[in-house]
Image 1 (cartoon, rainbow, N blue to C red):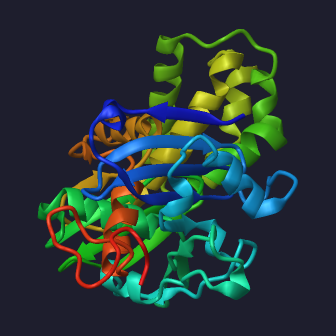
Image 2 (cartoon, rainbow, N blue to C red):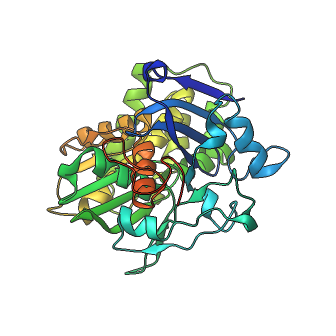
Length: 338
């Protein structure tokens, strides 16, 4: 089902200048942006790259943008798994260190072979080669957006992006200089849905807020106390339930606490003396990470929300897709790619 949101600014005098798209594995989101980077409209659908409707990528995008009359005349720019080997069009990674300018230079632009018009330019992901290879797609755009909205982060900061594959990224001098991935979200999904650990919660009465908070806290503290990592603790989810130490409905909250607590504990231990961390992403998930920091007695990071729209806007400007509202066009039609 498509879901759309219209902000108050959508009824203002500003016109659309750019369509920004975040196309992941499980979901598709788009924003209609003004020349100043303001979000005028938002739309989303459950059409990730592994769950496309009939007609594939073009049909999904056309349906998502169908209620925006001016969308056909605006440049499109996309980030995320849409640029992966399984995506619409594969875009090679950019190596660290990377920033908005290097991402814009490596942007794969629509052309006749790709079926333009109606095909977005696709932002490359970022690759770290040492000490072990690691990659991201989509998070680099959120980081660019976070730096645009909070310039004080550019000098030296740690950005944490919770998700299916959480990223802990180090930024110095406005560039992503390194990062590490924790598969916390995917581990939680697999263990809670496809293992014996998730069975007690199936069909159980809804967990209360207090029960959920207490179970999450217990999980975080258990992870913090372990010297062997989280793996030896996983079966405690079932053992605690069987022993009466935790209710069936709260077992998943305890599992979440174990996994998030282990990620945060490890992340802090790997970065002694690192600058204060910032949380970037969806409010509910960032809230869990902030609670884990608090439970562990660490400074609670500021949460800056989903910064993908602003990141797409900044990369689009670097790529020459549009002229910012406060600058005069330089020999080209505003709002169209060169």
